[in-house]
Length: 234
Image (cartoon, rainbow, N blue to C red; front, side):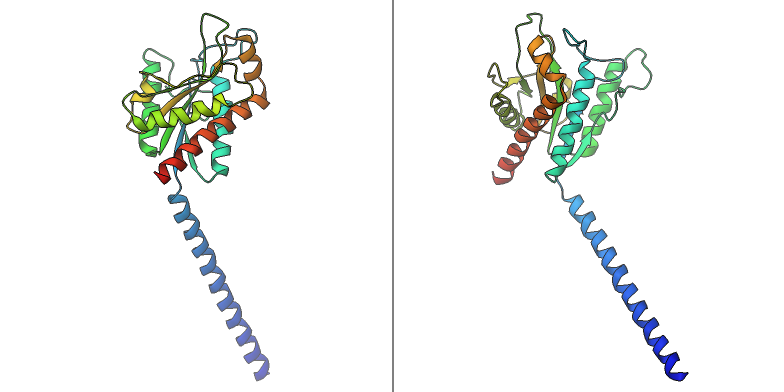
């Protein structure tokens, strides 16, 4: 009986020790993951428009720019997270960021985007949009950057180069300086990626397909990762 008691006591002690070790291991792993996450590079993706502000519409399908922007932004987030980045989206749903759709809603929406960007303290900001032009033959992706920011220009060049290298590219473009709120509202490297012209039937036919939107997201990711790599090595 005494032997059985001692055996059970020893077994209980061993189980307790094992539980302590496992608990310590889990806590250490959790701390390691938290530390690792804290060290990840943050990128802000801004899906343009939303809610009552649908942006431009497709010339044939009537596709809303805001919906195309959101889908590409979600796909881009997935790709960047697979690469180990931490992604903050300004707009997660089809809704806008303005609250009630009353007078001044557009500026409230833009200020909310600015707040999200500033709180994130990102390495860069990419605002996803679709273009429109009265001349329906105009097509192709166009990237805009803040004129007084060398980092924004460098980011714009790499994303534009990635767009120009796409097999579907009908017109190779150079990045353009732009005076837009989303580019000027923070000090972080920021670009607007106009992924195509919804006013052009050929661009629209591509942009309304899930396959092409995935290719656009991959192309944006390629430019972003190239910029972050060059910044890290520079």
